[in-house]
Length: 382
Length: 251
Ligand SMILES: Nc1ncnc2c1ncn2[C@@H]1O[C@H](COP(=O)(O)OP(=O)(O)OP(=O)(O)O)[C@@H](O)[C@H]1O
Ligand SMILES: [Mg+2]
Image (cartoon, rainbow over all chains, first blue to last red; front, side):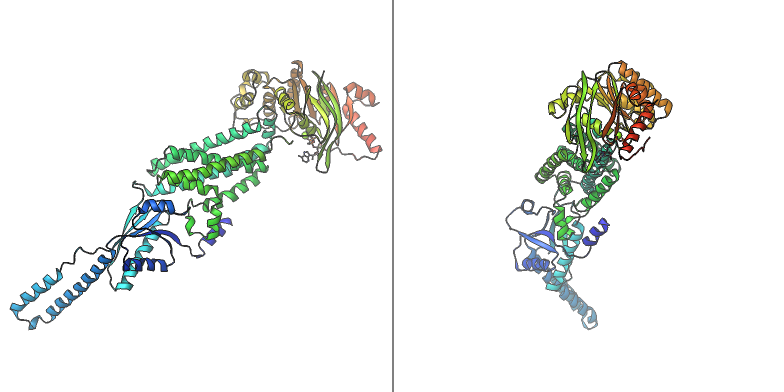
């Protein structure tokens, strides 16, 4: 039901625009016209990068929270190349017209002239127009960007139709793609952060909730409360155990990824810390649910009702950008969003500053859950 | 010396008065039994004395400590052992693991193997809790309640749901614990259990103690009664005469 709602509104055609940075290194009439035609599609939310700045650095700083970095560079010489293309195009047309004429009327052309005409056409077609005009744009993207292929295709077709409409030529454009991270990653790698994050979240929100409410149901918590063990010790012990369990299972998943799918994006120290804090954070959330709800089935139902929407609204598997505004807004309140962003930044993009800024949010959430959990779990009814 | 002193305990759960002015003492080294039907207030009384619940009003001291002070409660939990009603240990741990787990919570704990031997659990030490029969599970619960060598034991319906011959095994264990100098406060709704084990008995119904004393005293008090069951029925009969309602479910 919940899923249906989510899918329904994701694909209801509520049109969304994608962030795209543009650096116009050519700064010419035609490059501006091209940017204008990109703009008219309403597909993009264009952000211009000043010509003299480093596009990658600039876009890292200026991007909005949830979007991946995408940069389209219009290289210097864009207009010249285009105009050249038009000339060479015209010349080609002229040359082939001449050839055609020469062919058709060859009966009427004296033998000794034929040689001259051919030589003339030949030299005409060799008119040097400077560099051969290659019409290329440079698209820089984040390899883990789930929208990258669709967007690359869109840019390419917009560019092609721009050329056709504006200049009446059929030359096709090349879009040079460039990945932000210079690492050779396999396709499976890009799913790893999403899968790990979702897994850690489910383990906490469903697994821990179940365990804790089961403890309450069988009266085990009461039994613990009549020993010298304190509530805080129990909660902390529980969280640490659950965190370790999560980590071991995550490690197992990475191992499977390594052996079966040959993933390359192996976790470094920062990623391990993120995984650990994430596991602690979601175990804390599970502890709160389990502490409040005594009925194991109700607790499991609640865990499911929270885990699945969170998985979809956190950008783990579906890009947040394509969702309607309201869902983008909701996703800001999903703890998994931040864990997922942190994992992606550290595991795939090796962007430790973004990873850290998201990690801080997860740390704060973990502390909040720990405190709320300590308050909500009833130990003694006093 | 009094191990437990309870004075005028009242406990309300919302509009329901579960305990209605309960007062009693438990003496050092005795077995004291609360006998009463379902919902009489037995568990509620025990949980108040263990510090799990707060009485709505009334006073109680356990092992000389005030239940309402944090310090007092800290000392109490070190020195009591508890077998809750329908106790379940952790399903996926073995018998020894379960007992050791609880032993770790105390600064001073008995040797786990000695406890297992005492309860005849040594051959079951490595069996997963979840695979044990009801009688064995109850013995594990008893083992856990003994890890800190407590001065006072609370046993909430220790034999409910057990087969008669297994019930007798548990009885002999409880007697042996008394011989070891433990004070035991148990609840039951089996008359026979109280007759066989208890030094003193309190009959509780609807949150009130309606009669209390040694078995012989109770039998003398109610002329013509030959057993605790007779006493119980006579007590309630008198109540009916006063316009009370009789509720005997669970007997
Ligand atoms: N947490 C609670 N909230 C509300 N009412 C409760 C609660 N615990 C017990 N009661 C009610 O208080 C009364 C006394 O319950 P208690 O568990 O103390 O009885 P008991 O003598 O132990 O019965 P049993 O033989 O069934 O274990 C019962 O009517 C019960 O329904
Ligand atoms: Mg009870």
